Picture 1: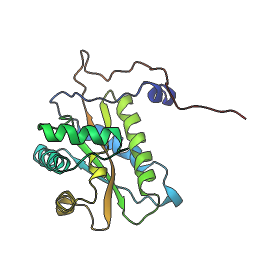
Picture 2 (picture 1 turned 180 degrees about the horizontal axis):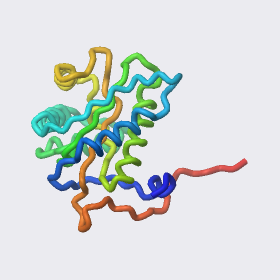
Picture 3 (picture 1 turned 135 degrees about the vertical axis):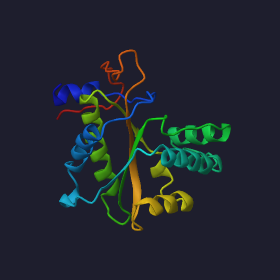
Length: 196
């Protein structure tokens, strides 16, 4: 698979097999994130790779609890509204039961923090696709990156005090007939291009 094919066939995976991903494959994925461009070549992303099910499960419960206390406001991002509504119903699992959660944090006061994290996450999703693994960009921890309880918990694990989460990613083997990601190239409905 070449880069162009990897980009066009990448899809978000939201259903995973209960199967661990080898450290060798995860290291390849992380390395592509580490080699992503960064503003001023700052290389200030902090990649937190979580394979421990107890840690992921605790984050899932904390995220659900935090969202269940929030109220929907006018013009709120639709996916955030969905997270709140599903959390209020109960049983909300933001990580879709994937065996790996990769959190990308960066300096809170660094002006390019979210962009640098997003670029690294995209690189990692493309590499996961090439390796026949499913992935999905996860916003929930970014939306809650100033929540005291979640922030304290992440800091008690490894995150530095001056860091915040600016994006996350789940990785695993897709729960599909062939165990590979769905790769149907879908036509674009937006993303207008203007040539001058």
